[in-house]
Image (cartoon, rainbow, N blue to C red; front, top):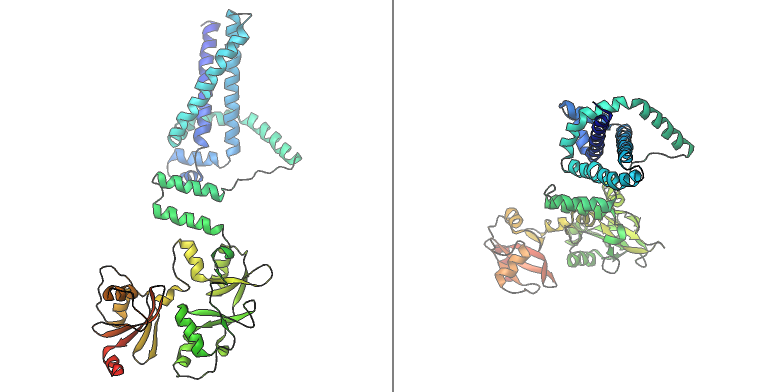
Length: 422
């Protein structure tokens, strides 16, 4: 075998090796953390070996880069020598014009693209040969690692793992939805969590202009009227002005006193402690505070310590879930307040099924879900306050209506109601 034939064989081998190392780099470093973690639990020999290699990606990267460098260097050197033998004056220029595009296109770009399309299969197929070179290049790799470690210590550099940003995570979720990897509902929830993490208390609070407050010393009758009109369960209490909130009152504690079963002059004895949080408090921290301390409602204060608004646990959860869970308190939809023997007050938002279960009725509606919607459907009009509608067992009297929406309803057994009318 003459020298020319040997050089051609070496050229072909170096060209193939260059393509091999380029494809290896693309395949191995396209493996995700979840892929590598799965390989660590696998019983497949190749997958376990890939996991061991990728535990220290610096070493395998040096093996690939050094192998690729030597392959391309030898290929360029021999090809230039061959061109000089044929064209002594123009060999260098011809080599640059021919070899460089050849290496870039067929030994660098094309192998990377091909490997990307099936990086898991490629990494498994390339593994045996790469492991061989990983052992052969050990002395060179060892010296290079010593040098790079020394340089990093001299310049006080540290290897850091870049954390994925919220925007990048959002893009990944959308891509996952498009490719069918993530269900739409799951993607929506993840996006809600991302948005949630970017917000603070000022973004979700009820501003002081629209929140409900009651003054210190208010009579129980007046306070209950405010509770019934607003449809909420807990209301903050202030002294002098809204910048001096002193606590919170729960309407459920006032009901026995409102109906005269117990005696109390005003709301003062029922005032409970209320927490204060800055408007800049991030929502994930705020939610943690609410859950750890058992808080249902709190005051949001501005930079000067004044009252900026009110925030509730359900409002925070609504923001996290991405849907309106309540107006102020979702449980108000399900509360049944007994006010006079068999007479009850319920929210107009109570579900018809819930009403049927609690009161032993069998109401059915084609269009409405709530008891308020059912009354409007049956009357074929927006009722006025005090207007009544009879069911089989009860008379439903509209107690409070706001903006064409039934807020609260009295549920009265039919026989007692007939006696009241007479």
